[in-house]
Length: 332
Ligand code: AQP
Picture 1: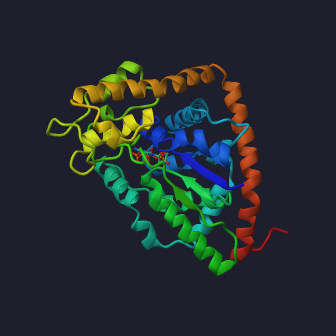
Picture 2: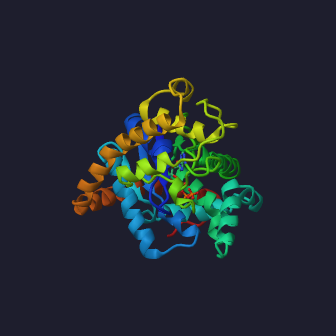
Picture 3: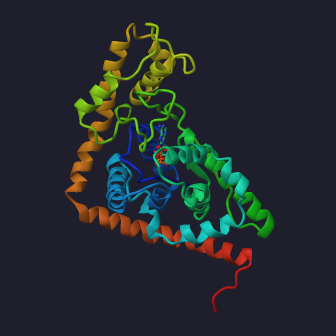
């Protein structure tokens, strides 16, 4: 059975982008067809300015939302990255294989470094080396496939390069992974800035639909989405990014295709109304289950404890093998 690994960063409240671009497929497909691991990758949340109490709170919330969305701990492994030391252990070895040039070419690094400076902060070294930690997350588990949104494709490519290089230099140790993408909704855009990704740590809050937004908040955000000049509803990602984004969200929520749906609307207002209702309906069961799980914290603790135990047992042999292969003396 193929091995799948993916994760979510607790850098903000989870968004509709996280759900449509990644989580929904983890629930509907990956946990049924693969030996799958899903992690709240909290070490990655320390790469930018952070408040320790908030990261702890968001990690807990993200884990609860993964379960609320439908990940079943009987079918897959759900855990918190920092509970499994193997990620950090392997990350250092991979830093000895990846290069400075590779890190500096990463688009997300460039974008986030600019954002950190604009916010008056300094750029942490860990922001630069973040893709190596992500490579460790993936390679530690012998992962075949990494289901991610489009924004993460470059990082998975780096994990592949590092795996191939390590294997060539030190002997076959890692499975070479590949990214898989959801097709529709691979890149949900900010409703107020439809040329930018809907990211959970963005500054443009009104353009982000959070998974725990109340239905009326969702409706308000979608109804106020920026649309393009012109009146006809056509699907054109380049020329009409605002309308295209709404059509993609609607298609992802209802199962249609954005091109076909565009023919069904004569006004932006009607498209927004239907999109808002479709999003509310997609989020409703997740929010209900989230509420139930919050009332049962012992259950979530148990899932995370078992998940970390399972993940550790899976990662340790590969990471130990990498330590031996690269030339480190085994402890007597
Ligand atoms: N807008 C999106 N559309 C489609 N997929 C998305 N994903 C994230 N945003 C979108 C996918 O969700 C998974 C988990 O994402 P993440 O936690 O690694 O990253 P993020 O939500 O992009 O959050 P950041 O990096 O903390 O902050 P921002 O967003 O400000 O950069 C991934 O599979 C991702 O592809």
